Structure formats: structure tokens, C-alpha cells
Length: 95
Image (cartoon, rainbow, N blue to C red; front, side):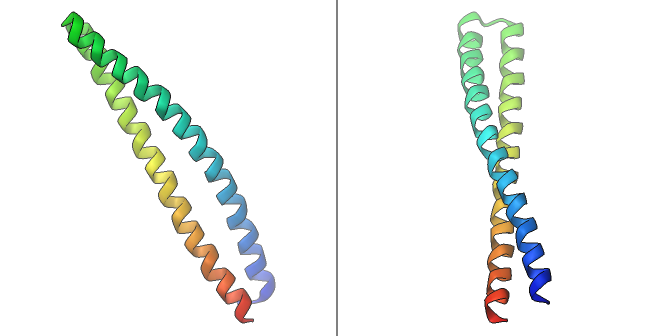
């Protein structure tokens, strides 16, 4: 692979990593908020013992779980891109 092509790929990966890291921070902030809301709705469901409160708790819990999975997917993509970046840097230094 040519030096120019490696440099282009490294720049592209760098841009993707920057975007994903920002997305990860935003997602983690949102997850904190949603988790707090789920905890509050759980307490309301326990205290009120109404079907509506129980449904709100289930919905909040599902939302928190979806956001948690999304956060984990972003983190996994970052790890994969960092590995790709390391491999490209090794190739670049070998040229």
C-alpha cells in the first residue's frame, strides 16, 4: 500500500474516531439522565403500585437498556478503528 493511501486512510480514521468519541460522550451523558429517570420511575411504581406507573417504569428501563447497547456499540467501533489505525501506523513506519 502506498504512503499516500495510508495517510488518506489514517486521516479518515482520525475523523471517524473524533466523531465517535464525541458521540460516545453525548451518549454517556444521555444514559446518565435516562438511567436516573428509570430509577425514579421504578420508585414511583413501587410506591403507587398502579399499572400506569409500572408501564412507565418498563418503558424507561427499556429506553435505558437501548441507550446502553448503543453506547457499547459506539465503544466497540472505537476499539476496532483504533486497532485499524495502529495497523496502518505500523505499515506506515515500515515503509
